[in-house]
Length: 225
Ligand code: ZN
Ligand code: FE
Image (cartoon, rainbow, N blue to C red; front, side, top):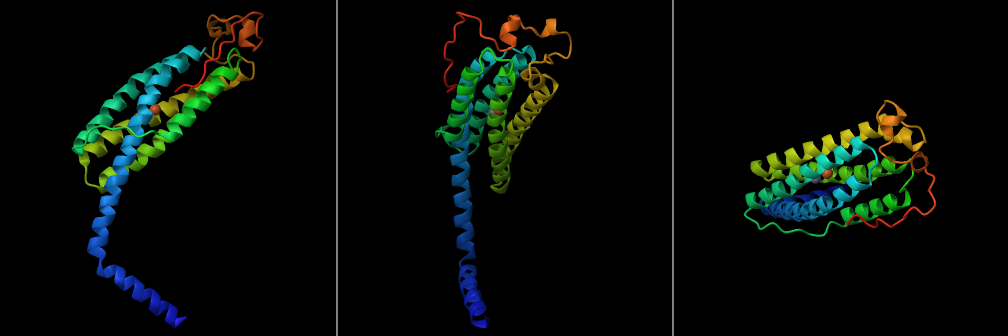
């Protein structure tokens, strides 16, 4: 027991001896990790800019359409803000394929296709969009902390702004799900908390109830990427 402890201390003091060097190495690693992740999100945001108009088009709830459209504008801003983050590091903006976003958008595209014409479509769209938001919130949460650790105030501020908008977008989607689309998915109309007439969104009742009229074009929407 004692000898193990001694061995442990011995190893530890060896590390301590090079603590200065180790710290420098750690800081360099964090900067690389930071840049890698900024590149990942730069790619993610540009994919989301392309995917959101398809979600807007697919949504049958006007409030959801408006929320997604508003987030598209913000997402275009995120691309610009990330370019400024790259600038703050004297780096050229460079994307690195964000595999998570590719997969989430592909799955989102599938669900839009599968639920087209269903009263559950808006609930499906909200869930797909929230998966993207949650990934962004996790990523920007880490990036914001890392920017602060690296002492890059400019990047930290930009990332905090993006994080705030992602959180707000996610909260809006939660509200829309709770106040309407989840109920609508059950076949009830809760979309606008008002009359069913107002919620019809110009679609025939058969479509809202998930009945596919004969001859209706069931064109595949495909992946959102
Ligand atoms: Zn974003
Ligand atoms: Fe987002």
